[in-house]
Image (cartoon, rainbow, N blue to C red):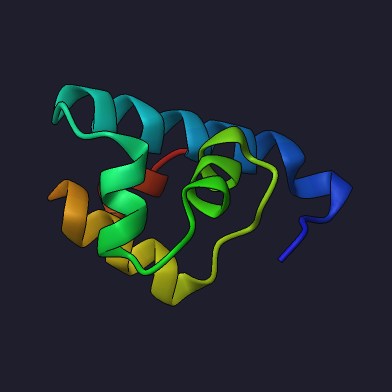
Length: 76
């Protein structure tokens, strides 16, 4: 889902955190996208803050990245 403009900074920060965690885990975006049944483009759009992920997608991302959802969104 496309994001609302007022949430753009939060989505950018969330995407940066997801990207950072993915790089720390040495995982390719394409690999995570496959595990989430997303296209690589759809996953990259989440990392770029273009797409507002559903809560379910966010939970699935945290499972793949082995990070608690609260830790991921804390302070955003």
